Image (cartoon, rainbow, N blue to C red):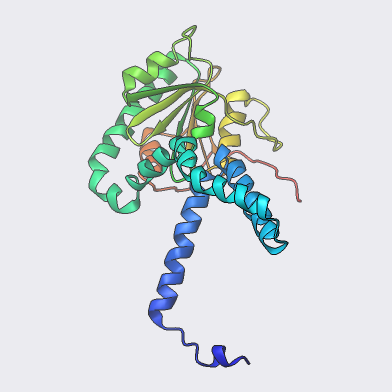
Length: 264
């Protein structure tokens, strides 16, 4: 064993520090997952590798040019990653600690969502509402129309009014704000036993498979309300069950649809 390793001691503080850094890196990767930042980050890694190779092989011109790029690239990165930085700061305000201070606001949002779903169901109007949780849904907002409006039952029912410009797509909610409407969600490719389910249900299930969002669907044909969470689709959910889901309580309900998943 090398002499340096013999005198190496790891204490409780070191373990806590390593764990904290690992958790922070995990949160950063979770924030940029599925966004354009991943591709840009890959490009930066490639440039760093090229810089290392140029330094080892003493290619001074390439080393000088890449050094200039890294020096001024930091300022360009702030501009390029501005949406992601805003999103990251917004998620800091949505941490578990600060959520404890905003339970009243969340319950108000839940009541508005429940009221909107009940109105849409009673009117037989199809709708799909996605509620963002830990994983950012910014890439799906980009597929529709970005808006910034406080969540209300009146707004949600108006958006899904037939023949309105944004009715044919999903609404995405972040915190107490509607951040997107008319958004396109990924369709689930998993075989579903119930053949009565349409595109909206497949879109809700697809998003629930690719993220931790809670997605609610109002069927235009049957006027029933369904929920999709963690890759599971549940039909005929009640207002109480909707409130439980939005409050972070994720019980299994009767009426869960069988989704067949192929083995990889």
